[in-house]
Image (tube, rainbow, N blue to C red; front, side, top):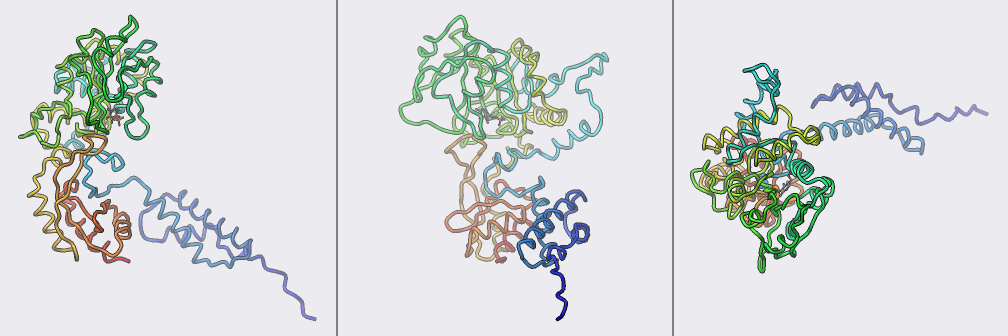
Length: 455
Ligand SMILES: *Cc1c(COP(=O)(O)O)cnc(C)c1O
């Protein structure tokens, strides 16, 4: 009678965490901190141990491959640069407006050292961070004063909280909109502590609708740019100039941040801007305060800007929330550079306006050069959009490289693996060159070639 060997626990064949970490550290590719590699190794080892406990065979290479897949997924998820070949210029998911490298360089000195952020070099006294970009942006749109905060949602919240807390704010039912990712006008108003008074109907609101709701307690008349939707047909809204004649201060949430609808910073006003309202025009029509985003049609960093009457801006700046939503020095330095470009009368140095106004002929020759190097590719006429909830339904003529391929979905996934975001149209993969920096053309061409060939 032979001795039966004691049953060997299959879990003992699972490699140690250290062994897997060593394999991960030796692998080529992006370096992640040891603590993260250890976590990936531990997760893979735990999973293998659990499977072995249920009787699955243990394969050391498979455990290492699982840990590698986990760390690769983590590394891929790190914030990184991508090529935007979607043709959506202010692409919220891809970071809205790119910052120009000269704008970034001008902020570098401020960001990497100390600065006169809140210090007056002339007197040695304490200064205000609103004296820089806020004041320059106010000047660029003809306002008395301005203040910069975290984003436009914060700007609206702060302005309402500071100017209308506990009092009534009258707004048209046609303007109680939701702007992407959870900015709902009625909810922001509730958070700010003011009382919403709805007037008119979804499609028509007249000046008498506002007039009938005026009370001693009316703090503001609010006008919200619908931004991301457009009503056509039997519609009527009350212009700022008429609202301003009613008495209470008028606050305008302009959204996009088009500083002046005559675009004096461009050689010609682009037709695709249609009737997008300008901040300057709202002020000229009598708005007391106007809020807008820094990273939509202004072409700057994420920020919210409030411009208007000096007294109201001072009230806003004093409110406790102003401290909670204030902009940091890097944003302020970048916005200062952007404001100076507008004041200089040439905003084509900003990537947003450069991309938006590149002639289709220029795009066509770039596309022709690119298409020549990609099998089954051709140059096509397409339409770009501004995006970011601006100018819905309006497009900018553009040029793309369309590639015919067996599986469009597969090729788009291959491109994403190479940090390229393109779009599908008419059974092709389309790269819209309007949103691609010319410096990236060679890389994009190479990626289209390899993403098309890969299974
Ligand atoms: C985009 C937009 C907002 C939100 O601005 P953020 O800068 O994204 O916070 C608010 N109101 C209007 C009208 C907008 O278009």
